[in-house]
Amino acid sequence: MKSLFLVSFLAPRYVAESSSCWVSSAPVGSRPFSQHLTTKCFGKQLHFHSRCVLFSSYTCSATLSVVPDLQEKETFDGEKASLLLKDLRKTFNSGKTKSYEWRISQLEGIAKMLEEKEKEILDALNKDLSKPGLEGYISEVSQAKSSCSEALQELKHWMKPEKVKTSFTTLPSSAEIVSEPLGAVLVISTWNFPFLLSMDPVIGAISAGNAVVLKPSEIAPATSSLLANLIEGYLDNSAIRVVEGAIPETTALLEQKWDKILYTGSARVGRIVMAAAAKHLTPVILELGGKCPAVVDSDVNLQVTARRIIGGKWACNSGQACISVDYIITRKEFAPKLINALKEELKQFFGEDLMESKDMSRIVSPTQFSRLVKLLDEDKVSDKIVFGGQRDEMKLKIAPTIILDVPDDAMVMQEEIFGPIMPIITVENIEDSFGIIKSKPKPLAAYLFTNNEQLKKAYVENISSGGMLINDTVIHVATRGLPFGGVEESGMGCYHGKFSFDSFSHKKSVLYRSFDADSSLRFPPYTPEKEKLLKAIFSGNIIRIILTLLGWS
Image 1: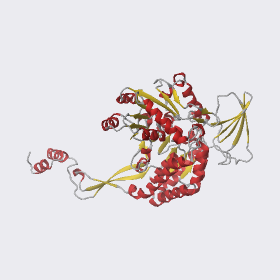
Image 2: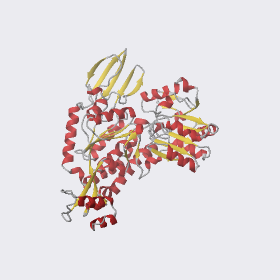
Image 3: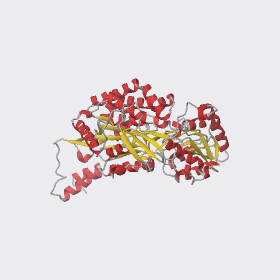
Image 4: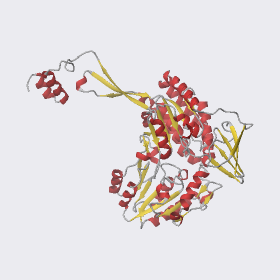
């Protein structure tokens, strides 16, 4: 069945309650949900609030009843997705979204929304991830503001056709590259930075003049609900829409023929998205992830290095970021110094009792919490913990954890960690780190800390990654003028700023000619004289052309 096509999408959220648990894809009191499903499983009850029935491995019986205080809502299926896309194409084909005035008006609407609803955005991020207010502002709200501001400032320049020199063979002529919108595009966002990674691509798609559907992540329900309400209230709903939901809704959307799809998430689901897009030859941008390494040389400023690594790991959504440091490689003799520096700075950042810190996000869901605990409790890993390891399932918190020299075949070294666990791998020579990194799929980001200029050069030349940063972490994604994207398994395509505009545009080649100077050389009959002259012209050698015109060999 088609509805099973996306069965591997992220699981719903579970909150344990003595003899029962609640599963919801959005909080009560946000946007309405259609059904209340009470399921009896082995003597326990599971209660569902969702737009769709979520499948479980349990053998169970279920009864459906309408929740009194919630408004009934129809299921979003393939038919409704098709009608939605038809409406968007009608708007796009009218030419409305192509104008500079429309694009600017929508960007101004986003800028106004970001100013007026900043508190609501930060509150939603806190509900979904316990994300501290300042972290939420720095990593999401301010970045969205910057992206919108850049688009407002540069849009006229971006839209201007790019002049191109023409060749001698087409004279007299002129040429240009015209950026034209693709049409109707789909943005499938993720839960770890649920606001920024929704709005940033949408800003790019609008700047390029497209109609857009945003599918936010159901794993961050408060932000998803807020995005649906804000976009409905601040933007043109004839061209910009939000579809909330989980597997069935995403499946219905992917069954349609879009002009481009941007997906942010795991490589596993990225393959599903790409397979769905391939049926319609729809181009995709995939922003995935991978194991992002940080190589630390022994000649560094130790305190600064430790602080910046912490900033790109535990202070970055508790390590739940596709560009966060996944593991460290350093020299064996230097590792104790680095570990001590990390311990000291972690206490400076988050206090003596790391589990009680209000300045660190929690794990997004029980499913993700269990996955991370499994990584820590593996026999090959559990005795390698040199710092941290505490966990609180009720609060969905895991303390910043450092593990030393785990074997390469341990699960923690075979998959993207996406959490507050930091393996440190030691080598005899820092150059040995290159082989370790190359033995794994190409990461979305690679980091190096050193004062050695030759090592910097070698790292840039020999390590392939989506992005790279020397002597810091993660902030390269906030740098104007740099694209954000992966390579191979860490993704394809890129966006941010002008790169977003270009990714959501078709670059149309246009050549202009007049009716003057029409040469017979290119037309039959093909005589030896024409052949000689054409070959001289194609060679680009002026002297040869003149000699040929004079009849000299």
